Length: 498
Ligand SMILES: Cc1cc2nc3c(=O)[nH]c(=O)nc-3n(C[C@H](O)[C@H](O)[C@H](O)COP(=O)(O)OP(=O)(O)OC[C@H]3O[C@@H](n4cnc5c(N)ncnc54)[C@H](O)[C@@H]3O)c2cc1C
Image 1 (cartoon, helix red, strand yellow):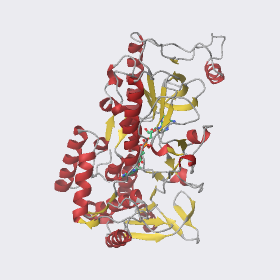
Image 2 (spheres, rainbow, N blue to C red; image 1 turned 90 degrees about the vertical axis):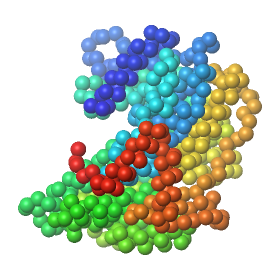
Image 3 (cartoon, rainbow, N blue to C red; image 1 turned 180 degrees about the horizontal axis):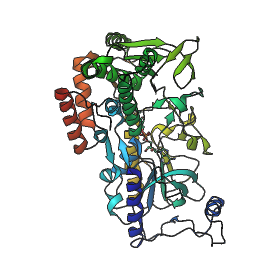
Image 4 (tube, rainbow, N blue to C red; image 1 turned 30 degrees about the vertical axis):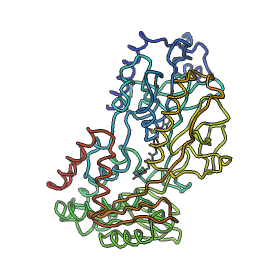
């Protein structure tokens, strides 16, 4: 229903806005559109016009189209000058997720809404300005020759509506599509594991975990099933996998022991990693994390997953690991849309950009965040898939595109040869990860080789919490997070399965 409400809101506000702003329906039917309309209308109905936003006129504001509403896209939208540009955001979700705190929502330390911020709050022009929109859709193709993106609506959960397609012309395009979880082609991962990237993933994990706890307490359940249901397996020992394991062990020790005391001796957490956990952190911090996680009851297993079945996974050495909850967190790679784009790529298959985050081979297209990487010709390394990279790229690019607009280059094909100013330079501020039981790691070195401060323990946990509380998207979220932390501390985690 939430999807439906969003969609209804977008459609009705879009319709209202159309009266105030020049919207040019595309007059030509593309092959995609005609096949879509044929599949819908079997009678001799006249072909439906393929709706969309046509090119802007010189007297109108130029239009920036942003693909994606993650860290990069949202930071960009926040910084764009809406006196110069109209902004159109296309994304399958109408909010931004504060990912560093997502793991905490899986076990009820934080509520889901505390880590999500609606796009309209981040860039109010999207709800107010007649030429700015948010479209709850997926971009399906990018036509760089015609300055146009192809989109398809998201109608999940709405049985009465089929998806439909539309196109949007852009003056400037910002591709901020993020990445998708890597499964390395391992059989069964997509079907049986849960990823941890979106709020609905966290909701799925929470529901499954609570269901398993309740099922295992029922009369008639076998010992074997009870052990399996209460075995939570996390694959991937990067910061996300470790933070989730830490949260889970905290939940078990503090809440399960009290509220599910009948089954407390059955529940356990296993973290499977092919190499060392937290490989990007200082050696000392890694050892500390290993010791603390083991102390909290997390079993660390070194292994490579070969196959995933509905109730067990199989490691390379043939070991079978039965599970009731399987969370997959083994890093990210380019999405299928990014793979399909016929543009030069950076090492690793990301969209290749130059020092100003442009795709140099095409006009007016930029790319930021996890989906982009420096072209080999720039001589710069591919930056890590991190929020701090995405956020700073978004901020930089908003300034760059604002300056282009101020200099009169906002419309399509009008900024050729313009002086762009300073290129984007990234300076790593350090990494943090929480490991449960009021402990965290803070590594302030710029890279693995350089010297710098690295801390572990309660002080780091305090720094971790303070840093994220100050970085959380808005005052509304900050308030929610602070209240959630306080409530959890006083009353324990919320274990209702809603
Ligand atoms: C659980 C977790 C914890 C993390 N913790 C940290 C941390 O502590 N510190 C840190 O620096 N980084 C952290 N990260 C990494 C960080 O979240 C990412 O690097 C960051 O989200 C990248 O931003 P982005 O905008 O490139 O991509 P995303 O934030 O992933 O956003 C991509 C956007 O594109 C949209 N999209 C996808 N496909 C389409 C399509 N076809 N059409 C239109 N839109 C589309 C998505 O819906 C989404 O809105 C964490 C990640 C996770 C998952």
